[in-house]
Length: 291
Image 1 (cartoon, rainbow, N blue to C red):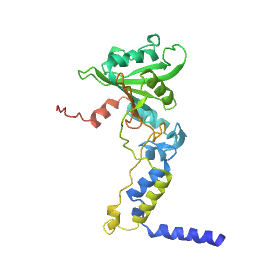
Image 2: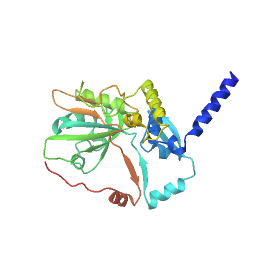
Image 3: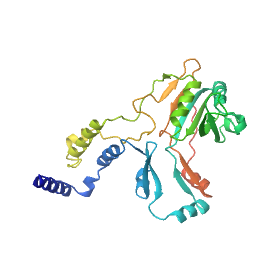
Image 4: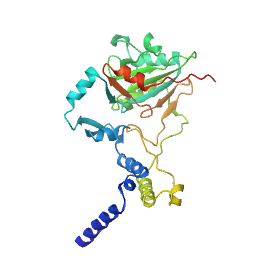
């Protein structure tokens, strides 16, 4: 048994030496590995950058950077006070509500209170100019049964009575708040939606890796079968929702629709005096096209 183990190790070393570094790091190989390693805990799009510089922890279904590996506290403080510091908050969950403004405000008033500050009906927030922050409670239960804090953004008015609202919640609170929203709007029926991200089982992942390894030995020009092979798609999912369940629900009586947009809309936080300058240089205004 020891000889067999030594032989297997020796063969593995020989096999790894036959491939050059470029072949070992082909894009399709990296994608297959990316998918395989985040089956249980989902990675953010900035995961690899953080994994090289932070101690990673597994929390709320995600793999997140917890503390830096180097003493970079002074650099972060300097960036916050003099330059710009960026944080990836994409693990926060986004719940989208669509429907008539009056219907939305009528039911949303049941899960918040004006006694705690602003509500979803605050004029500056309702216009879409500012983001709001408030505490949610179970329907008609204030001041008891608090669900937790959320932030929200209304899409600016376009002249129609139909509005769009994004509610951002912490992943630990997502299921409870989503359940309460579905209850007050009576959104029980799944809406017909197209799942954009592929759902793969461990067996399918193994087959994908086998295909990658089989075609990874030859160059692309010489590999006729490899050209026909479908490249493995990078899976960027959400640790708080079941990929086999619906992501959107609708109320047939009012037409209100609730969608789980977690990990579909990324969120970054910029801190520091140069934040506006960075955004101005990075983002370019799109030309408005009317159909």
